[in-house]
Amino acid sequence: MSHTIKDKKKLLARVSKIQGQMNGLKKMLEEDGECEAVLQQVAAVKGAVSGVMRELIKGHLVEHIAEQEDAQKREQDMQVILKVLDSYIK
Image (cartoon, rainbow, N blue to C red):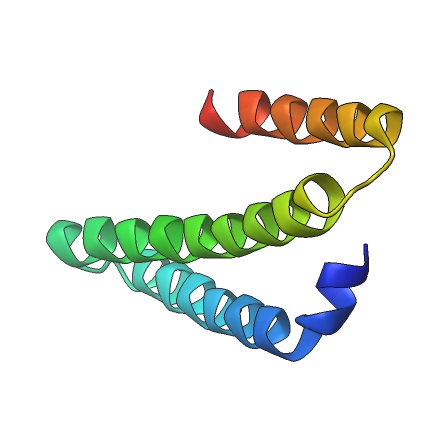
């Protein structure tokens, strides 16, 4: 996907942040962290993952659907994104 290559630095920075958040969550659980703090950390991780997904979906919609001139290819790409959304929203 060309949009992931174009936005590679930004996406990798987001993923690195998520890794840090996950490491923090693991440490909290290993050290019997306070329930409220653990829940807040899980919410932060979920929000960060949703942010990455949002950026990837936006890139996919722009490059593979909005700018796609081939109607058949556009329909195939739309089915891909719908399938991903179905599994993500479950």
